[in-house]
Length: 598
Image (cartoon, rainbow, N blue to C red):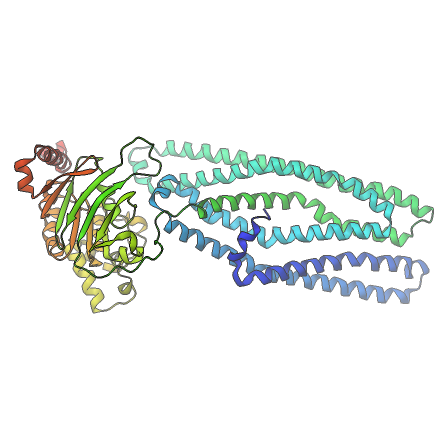
């Protein structure tokens, strides 16, 4: 744990000196507490033994002063420890959120969102509690034990030796506790992440769960996971409880043994009554660090596991990033070239073919190319390569002669806009969602902003926005689930159009629309497509009609390219694919039996 402490230092920033001061202040407070028994010894052996009441007052005032100093130092300790913990909490959350934004899509495909959430929230909170309380308590406890045992030996070597020998077994017991507690601690944190995932999935999928009448099934699944976590937490409690038993019993036994021995020594005049009184007063000061070893060890182990879990995310490699020497993308007409492009996922087994296996395609400035293919042919994968959502594994993609890996990600993604089949909206207003890609307009209301917003909504046929309670200022709710699928798709399309991009990538963004609405959107889209370069994934024959040319993707390569009429005339494979798409779209657009009969 302490080896990893250095990794926490950058997160505390300017608050690190306060952490150091807080530890030093806490150590002074402990030293003051250990000095009080000396004053008690002087009082017992002096005025209390002689009966001179006048000598009691100076000692009493000294005790009061030392108590006030100790209280003041404790206040300062809390004051100085507050900012480092708060700073650590905030900067670690910002760091992991930033990392999650930069990590590749393949990472997010592998990880449960609940596990990521538990690391960003629960594990960071555990680290903050450990730094603010556990770390300083461990340092001060160790300092107090070393200094306190030294004081006991200085008062009487024999009594100090007996007390030390009695508490030595606590070292062995604590080591065994560490190994036993570490396993259940990590298990509990992982199970908490799984439980968080269950809650998140159930909330997001509540419509599906209710529609299939499976609420009790998911309730039972959640109960099972919650029960597992409860049993693990109980196991943690039992492990800590066994340690606490020994942490209370052994120091009490040490006190009992030294008491019997001390009485004998005092009776023989080897030690004074004041020394005995001070010895046991010092032993009482040592009880807190001894009895809290279990709590501090448990907190430290929890924090160590939390730190490991946190760095599992932070240390994950960012495969897609700005290459050394990356430059801003230069203005250009919008030529897009796929040059012998290959792509395979990192976990693809050796011997399996690439998903994209030598794709070549040239799209002229202002041209619209429709990409069609059967399910699983790799169409969506191709679209993800243009904005480097995924990175090519071989070959290159050029925009106006620039390799997209040679330009900065920010400038590339400013020039390339995407609309997906499965649209994602945020818990923001319609205005903020549509203008998401226009950073300069989001917080700058005005005529230009309103014009851009309204134009994008008109092209996407999103007139329904005017009927929302607050119009474009209406918050659409989490993931936009308060809207229909078609409404979400139209707002996502409007978002892509509003960026006025050099490249427009559309991954079947009209699949949730009815035939009439789709026709209106396609008609309005022609004005946008006439002034931008576009790659459109088509799942409906009607979408193909938007394109100047059509490219047929088959087994990761372009096998045919030409106009729709040309390909119909010369390519049997194209006719097969287009008829398959026509059958799928007819099935999707045909009403059910009762609707058809009505």
